[in-house]
Structure formats: C-alpha cells, structure tokens
Image (cartoon, rainbow, N blue to C red; front, side):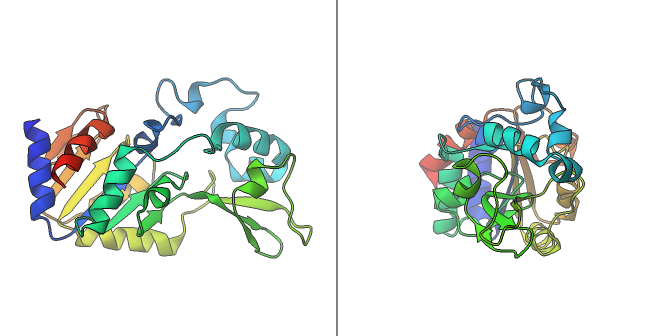
Length: 241
C-alpha cells in the first residue's frame, strides 16, 4: 500500500503523465495474452500463433489466418476493466496526457480515453488492400471466409503483423510523449516486444514506474516497481484521483 500511495502522490504532483501499457491491461477483462503460461503462444494449433499472425501467412494462407483471428481476437463478449476506466478518468481530469498501448482491442477508447496511440493497430479498423476503403470490425467478425470489399478487394485488419513495421507517425508521437513527460507509468507488459519496449529509453523525466505481475528486464531502471495485478493498483488510484 505504501508504494501505491507513493505512486498516487507522484500522479498528483506530475505536470505530464503518460501511461504505456501491454497485454496485462486487457487480460483482466478476460482476454488471453500471448506470452504467459496460459497465453495463446502455449496453445496447440496446426501452425504456431507467431506464424499465423505474420504477414507472409496472411498473404499465403488467408483463410487459415482468419479462422484463428476470429476465434482468438474477437472482443465482442468482453469490455474495458477498471484500469481502462481509471485511465480515461485521469485524462478527463487533466492527470494524464496520453495512453500508449501495444494492445489492439480498442478498450481504451471504449472506456473514454481520447489520446490513445496504438502501436500495433486495432481490430476495430479494417481496410481494403485494393481501394483502401475502411470498415469496422463487423466486416470480419460477423462474416465467414475471407472478407472482401464492395470493389472486390481483400480486406486486411489494420493491425501490425509479424514482419510488418510500426506506423512511423504513431511511433514518433509515442516517442515524443515519452521523452517529454515527467512521470511514465508502464503497466501490464513484460517489455519483451520490440521495437515498442525500446521506446522507454527515451524517457528523461522524474519518475519511471512499472506495474507488472512478473519481473521484467527493465525493473532495475525504475524508480518504483509494483509486482501485482494492475487492476488492484488502479482500484486504489481511483479512490484518490
């Protein structure tokens, strides 16, 4: 509790706070992450999930890709949790500048956050590879087979697959946010996914905080480390913010 009180004090005193989050933010909504012992990468499929979610697999075995995608990445029966809601409230009250997320579920916007930088894209957006027309998630999750555009082109989710690069505009904005904040709160991420994890090296502020159940390679760099469920921490933050 003492560590959480320290974090709350830092939030109250901070002129610019940024939140950088990963899969652990959404697992408390019921979604599976990828790398934990119960994650998608430890389930058995005809192909490894890392391969299924790659650019070459999408292009060569598109129907197989969509089977996995619909089965594992549909968030229709899930909703934002306490962490998403408190972050949105913090932004509304001027206590948070932005959310930088590695997640693709769109829960931060659903909870009410306005400035969300989605490093890996979003399942909520899909586009035609032929004419670039955009569609919402219904074009994928409410259909079968390979979704196609009215022009006949194949539709691709606006998510960053393996072998694809991050959007340079979003990447630069994320680096700018991290390099100009005085409090950076990292939550629910093992910090093993690059290049996203490397952005933390741009932090030049006052306090670097990490909230994650497991030890990460960046623990020693932080001013405060909380090895607990992120939802429990934000439940306490809610009481004060």
